[in-house]
Image (cartoon, rainbow, N blue to C red; front, side):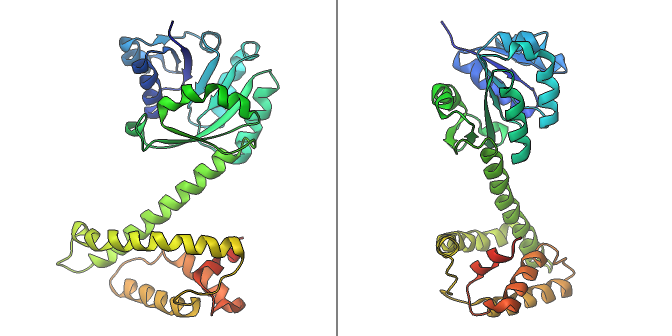
Length: 287
């Protein structure tokens, strides 16, 4: 007898999640506000629920991947009598406070709630590079369904605060967008004159960023220890260097907007007496 799962939401990510369970042999019940999106999955063997209640009642484990957490509450509110005894895994992107609010609301109807964050694009689902973050008030409930969730990628349970998965999800995305902003700025600067291509510059940038990634370990230890003693170039020297980046960018017709936020924080750290410390001291000025 196959295992059963229900999945609500058939955007690009929801489709990828549902397809993985269909391929794995689960009896997969799907629901979407626009039923037409379900047709390709139904053709592959999924079952389309005509109502939210039907989708919830079809399985004990319910995965939700909608546009936002307001949509999650709106959807589940149509079938709250069906929630007792169900395990709701909400993979919808949102803030930590939203996750906590949805958790409190769902559990008030007798369901178990686990919040999740997907660190992958749809094509990565089920691959070793797909990482899913989870948190919720019942670690035992997570342990019970971990084998079901493992088909989607590597699972990491981050504790009993329902908001923890969202917090770490958004923090990781912030790191990613910081990387992207550095790539766009540096590439625009390098290619501002004829003769350099983005692909050519990337051959220089990639190993440099790889080397700097190793330096993050030292910075993390300094932050944890509260000891920002420099291991190389101090903040005052680095601020002077960034001034040249800003000046050169303007001269080359490239906006320095992406680097100005950290430049401002580093300048504040120097003004507050951290000029001889490492760049890790900037963490004190993120509030």
